[in-house]
Amino acid sequence: MLQFRLDAGDGEDRQILSGIAKYYPNEQELVGKKVQIIANLKPRKMMKKYVSQGMLLSAEHDGKLTLLTVDPAVPNGSVIG
Image (cartoon, rainbow, N blue to C red; front, side, top):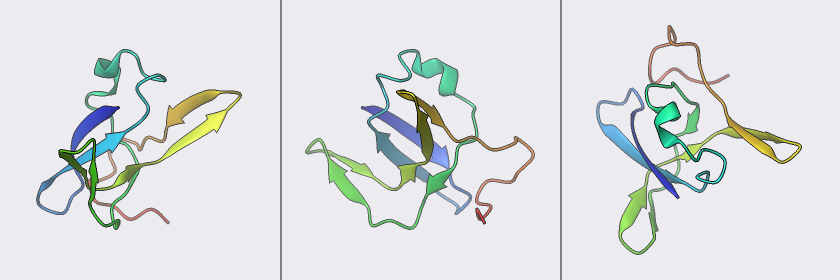
């Protein structure tokens, strides 16, 4: 499980927990990436003490998972359409 702290463009940092650790053994390669998330989910308590406030979007093909990223020029909080 990886714990992310990100700016979703809504004025406060958001914590998201994701079970993608086996696909990203070097989690440092994710630092600074702009990822796509689902932000309008009810916060969910996970692992008895952490709260996840959204879901990361990813794509899977042939057993490989890739986080969906956004061009750095796109402002945080932009709506996916």
